Length: 460
Ligand code: PLP
Image (tube, rainbow, N blue to C red; front, side, top):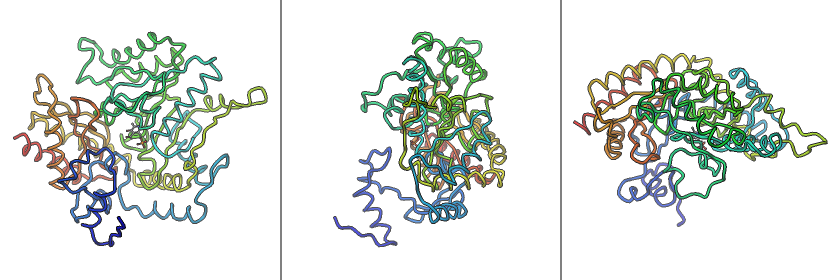
């Protein structure tokens, strides 16, 4: 079809989308009866769709990304200036924004020194997995090649990342996957796997040790965890968990890889989620909030000790990281990320996230008193989940259709919220909230008011 939509012809645009675009994570049958929704503009916390309807966005762009809000002209200017000066150069050369941003980022990450650029969260994680495999090959005689990941965690859509996926609906049907990725149990106390444990956090962490011992400590190279599980249900770690995880990694010489793709750059009220728990990682990966969606960029950050393991010499000329990311050399990424960080600092957005996070928590807890369907409220900073149940006593999850009806009702009321991402059979029952770090008290109240109204409308 030779289709040329006129700029203002939104109906034609919607039809073009329906005819030609394959949407992410979508069951397209729905679009036979319902229009696909096109988002055409954003400013601050607000977005507008092609029909002109305004929404308050409590998801930061659908997938916890637009940390500093929409319509930031200073980021657009920084990107434009950089693209005009030099848009791209890759391979073994460095760049001005790459060097500046790495230095700025490292200031916020004591103990870490090296930044490897790529484009997506999946890719950043793949880089860390490859580094672990190369360390195993070159320094452990091929042992320590296994990578542990956790039930309910998600690390991306590429094959290595899907091999490390704790969400069955995300990786079913796409295998076979590479060997050597081993699952450890989740740590969600509300759906406790260790009901009699005196200290659930310690028991959940000890379950990781049990997997290491089962697999053989000399085969396990790394443990990859989200600091707070995001799409798997906004699972905050139980007391004592992270400290014990760190002890276990040290004891068995297992590298700790923390996936900050969601939590990084302020989402929890600290620069990084792991900093809330006093953990010392060997790898940190980040993407979404890194440039708030103004450019595609991700980073794999590591220590000087790890970096030093990749220094080739005449005796071992193959011992350097033999990896490249073509568009990890696009300079829009670090230019946008640098300005994104400046905004977070100058507008005191970490402090705002802490304060507004407390308000969000209080509002959700108040809703919980009025609505029996809220079984548990979990989260930190501007990153919250409300798990919905059919019965508070038995904790039977609320049916997914009803959870989706609550999300749809909020949208009708002009507020966009999220829900666990159809990745866990029977457990897609958590509403997810991740407003931009610029949210005001009025924004937070409007979000929770909409949820209250939606719960009443859907569940009575
Ligand atoms: N890691 C986590 C924790 C994520 O939530 C995601 C995406 O949602 C990814 C990695 C993958 O990032 P990307 O979609 O940029 O590849």
